[in-house]
Structure formats: C-alpha cells, structure tokens
Image 1 (tube, one colour):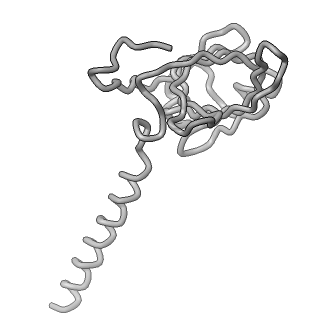
Image 2 (cartoon, rainbow, N blue to C red):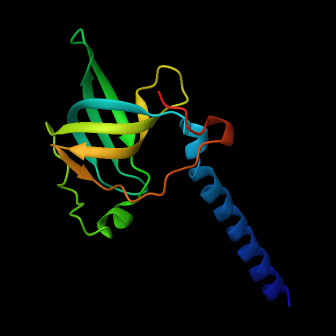
Length: 144
C-alpha cells in the first residue's frame, strides 16, 4: 500500500513540474509586441535550426550605414517546418543570404530581437507555418 501511494505521489509531482516548464516556455505575447509589426531588410550571419525554435541572426544597415545585429525567433519547431514540405532544413538559410523579415518586435526597449511572421529569403517567400497570434482586441489593425 505504501509503495502504491509513493508511486502516485511521485507521478503527480512529475506532472506538476512538467506543466510549469510548458507554461513558462510559451510566452510569445509576453516577450513580443504582437500588436505591432516591423519590416527588416538585412544579411544573414547565422542560422540556428534546432529545438525548441529556430533562430536567424542577421545584420541590418540603417540609412547612415550603421550596422545593427538582430535575432529573430521562428515560432514553429524544426519538425513543424519540415512537415510543410517546402524544403526547410539545416541548410535552407546560409550566411550572406539576403533576408526581408516582417516580425513582432521585442517588448524589451532597445532589444534587437523579434518574432518572425513573414520571411523572404533571396527573393523567395518561405512559409513559417505558425498560426498568427491574435493581438489584443484594442490593438487590431494597428501597424507600424
């Protein structure tokens, strides 16, 4: 009887711990301004195609020629991207590729990070496969 109780309590504890990490991970509305979009045009410096979310690192020049280093997170996992059957892989994006990205900017002031919504790579549009995150009702229709 004691062993059964111990097993049940252990299983409940593991489920509880697992649910906290799942809740902590999915916070796009907390990390990014989903009611705003920005368009960035730059050159890829690194492509990190791994779980939980692929990252694209790229440089953007302003009108004065000053380079800003940016990072964009893709909402879909590598498996989700691969299942779109359009060619996503570890070699899809390469350093020096031209990128145009529509994304939600970070909520952290001055951060050069965003959540990718639309991606054009060397003139070709690539589907990201993630359902758009709906902005709060008051913000719908607002664009930057």
